[in-house]
Image (cartoon, rainbow, N blue to C red; front, top):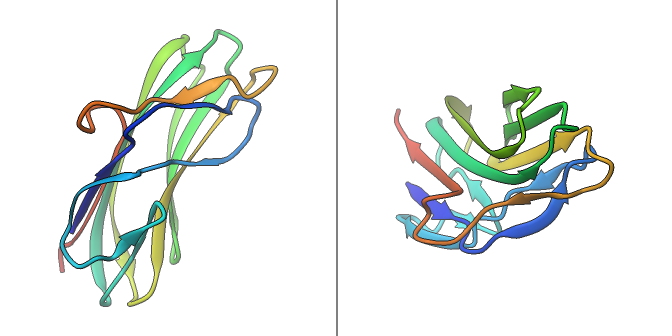
Length: 138
């Protein structure tokens, strides 16, 4: 099991269809030392629950789509926010994923429609803005 969060805001990482891996630089817990460099590596074959919450800032009315996804070895799971109204946007996702020992998972985000990469991934506090969790369920 792991719970990690982004401790400081990452500025201007997406907005012009740039795929940005989400930074989770602070661990609350990592029970088996399976999390490093923003990536979880499955220690054993099983079903893992993967969840995330990402707060995106500096979203303007030009933005046409915000997408965050669970990028795993066996499959990806997408969450969309089409035609966001601007301002802060919260993207949330969770799914059970089959993983083999050694498979990896990370979270990616992309905004589209801005003239350049102006969108920020919020961080700070104690993980109340952008967080990632993984746990073995079966």
